[in-house]
Length: 320
Image 1 (cartoon, one colour):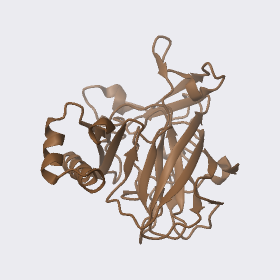
Image 2 (cartoon, helix red, strand yellow):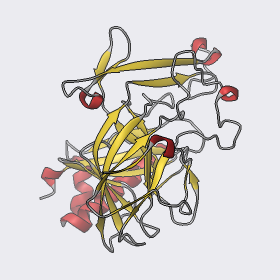
Image 3 (cartoon, helix red, strand yellow):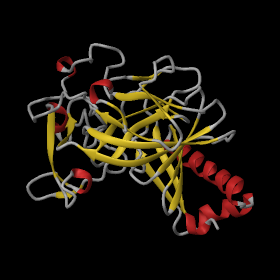
């Protein structure tokens, strides 16, 4: 199986000028060994998020959130859609979260000075599960709190049309740093293709994350990600779409949040009308009445130029 190694996964932009590291055929599985968002800086609680001490933070924007790629998909052309299936994610033996002054929404808190007066790094141990790996392992938040490792790929996308954008805060119809918890094993992402080969990048795996990623970092970790790409020729999608085993999700990012929510919902309606035979009236009424229609707020953290990321989801059982 072809693989991009961890040391190769140190790109910090979605750049169509990069030479592909892999060339794959539709349906061919491949792996990307990813760094964590700090490119290995955070290892212990003593490693603080002080910008002056972090490698790459003397640059604007900082060299953080590394990605591996690009991966060239044979046959992909502008005007196609690439379907990226996340087959497997095996995370490292630990993850981290870092808070401190001027980081996140409480980085200048006077109510809780400990959140804004000093830097804190928490390291979470991962223990293997029945498989003998972290694939089904446990994340230990503290001596008394733990939960299953629930990994996903935080930053994934193809090269955008006319720009070179950073992996730190680049977002768009093509993907980017969206921190969508449904970029998870077993799910397939639909992305528009702008360049020959699609030019896929991936990185920034999280071992787990709550809605909104409130502090600005989640359980950041290294990982090995196995992916597969297929092609939908001469097809259009307005923004990132997710097909899960039991549901479909329309994703959108914007500010304010209500714009992201409304556009994700309208794009879901378009999906229902275009692909599933709904009338506009039925699609409009379904999203307002169906008790299983859901809005997800995947990412809503105050960092750089990041927009807020919402998803509109409906189960497949209502589509046939």
